[in-house]
Length: 263
Image 1 (cartoon, helix red, strand yellow):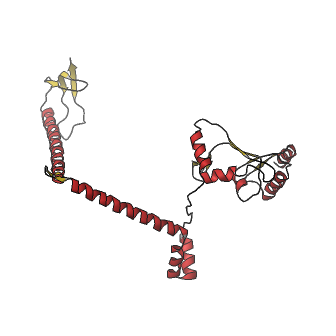
Image 2 (tube, helix red, strand yellow):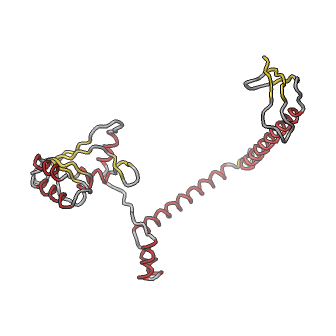
Image 3 (cartoon, rainbow, N blue to C red):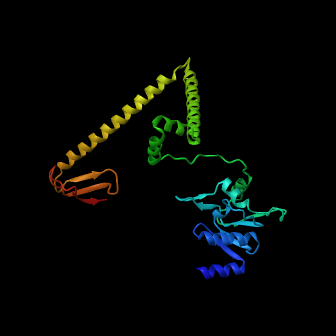
């Protein structure tokens, strides 16, 4: 509430986040710049477009909510957050502190702090509403030209060129493999084809054999009578068994047959 916020300001501490009223945020920013507030607990909104340098910056963790899931902060976000450490003309140096947590990796932190070049990716995503407005205002051809000159289209075209080159390199590599498959010992490609056909034939025969065995077993079971002694070759009840109830005839069986097991 208001009075808790005011009491915190009097003690030299404050909060700063996107959910605060703009007037409250401006007060916190002004008091912090004047040195009347010594510590500000803030989200990354404090680092966006606000001149509020501090002597030290403390990051609770290197993970943030991006609107969809919790994800690691990028090197650019880390630089933006910690770049507030060190007041120009006042501090010789600034300090950035990251709290230790379970699973914390110093190597990961070093990678964030040591990266100085950041990939630039377009966040431009045309919508149906945008397309309709463009066509209405500029016409179909002019709208297409405008979209094709966007940075997003440039990146898409660049990606397509890279993929095309990779496909070409892969095809050239395959040609090299094809050339090396032919030697004085024979055609390896033909040998591989025959091996595939043989494997397919073996698989087909195995399926046919399994189906035939199931059919033969079903016929044999239909011939059983109470009092018959059978031998179960494998499974949990392997051994001799006495038939108590062979079950119903085919087509009317409930799926269960009565056997008494004997070791």
